[in-house]
Image (tube, rainbow, N blue to C red; front, top):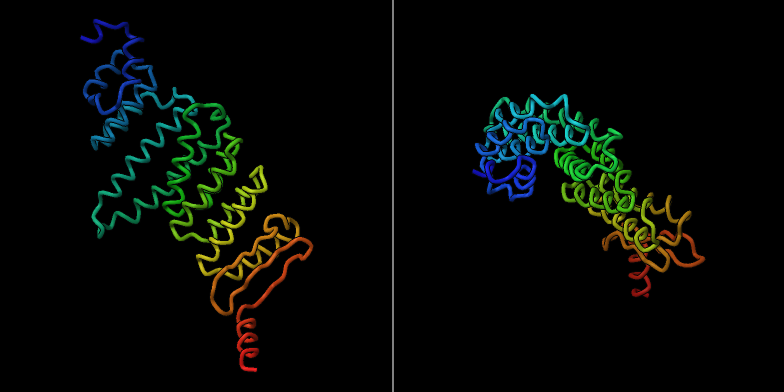
Length: 277
């Protein structure tokens, strides 16, 4: 009925703009037969098939058009297929012997997606950054931190005005998964991209706190000793207390004072001695 009411292009546009939940897989499949060269309609059908658990159908829908897709659409299509494989993996019983091999395949597939993300053609593509961001987040989730670092760097290239925000998001995601060192590295990348002193200081402190959270106090101190002498404004008038426990380190930076290391255990002992006298 709709085909009789609307011209083909108008109908397709209305379908693409409609809420996905209102479109059935069968209806979209029939519509695609009338417009097989429409890549967005094909992707929309694939998303509906994945939502319905029709993983084989999703692959079959994409296969005829894979060679004709432009770089952004090919990336989005490949990402949808990867998600279908991830759902297959998640559906496996915990004791299944297939899980290990399936997870290895997912890791390999995610790295292949990373190679697609490097395609120069993504620059300026509307869907490009969103898909790259989703893949980068997933890379952190499954522990592919080297890939995540590359992808968030790619996002910084695609959206230069948000460079530090992407890296800071990566830091928060890594921190949430207990990847403290990686989180600190991401926050330091954000610090390097930040345009204002306030943001640079915020990202630097986040890196210090990430290392503190992972009981990597020595690394946090080394980071401070490396960064603060060259950029004392990062901690100007700021006292960074790494922990409130004996034996850990307080870093105190002030105008003209440079970097001062104080062992809290020594201070506590000195206080105790002074009180005894």
